[in-house]
Length: 197
Image (cartoon, rainbow, N blue to C red; front, side):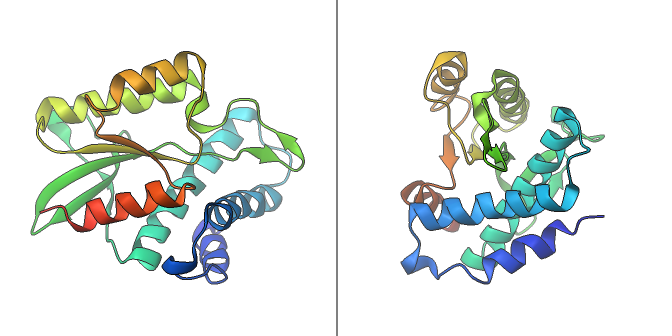
């Protein structure tokens, strides 16, 4: 069994402090974690198996980055039965303070390459991935219409139906889609979470 937490922590220990971060450093950190995972898993996985594992790795990367680099503690796999976000379909992350839910976060990231081969539609470039994230946003907002909901990723779509769906959702049922490999977006998101009352 691959220890994703160990992979991420090993990479994080070589990542500079917040003031020295750049887009390239963050992207190298995320991609390096994915590369290490895929190397440990080998080549026997199917597309679906690989996608599931790299999605789990992205969640681990995001969780540890928030906790260890920015001192933001998030609840993982947060169940909201009234929103049908339970029974294996929990919200990826929630910001909870004083036992009060403050926001919901859906993580939709993945590897962008396998070895030297670029993947054609990683993360939010896949329309099915966007649909799932927007569905979770809808479920969340039906129960908590005034609380913020965020989608975090390492790849945003730049064209096609995936981009169109993201554009429709962002600013409506999704407060922001955050590319954590974009330093400015990441740091703005960190400030937003830290300042959430």
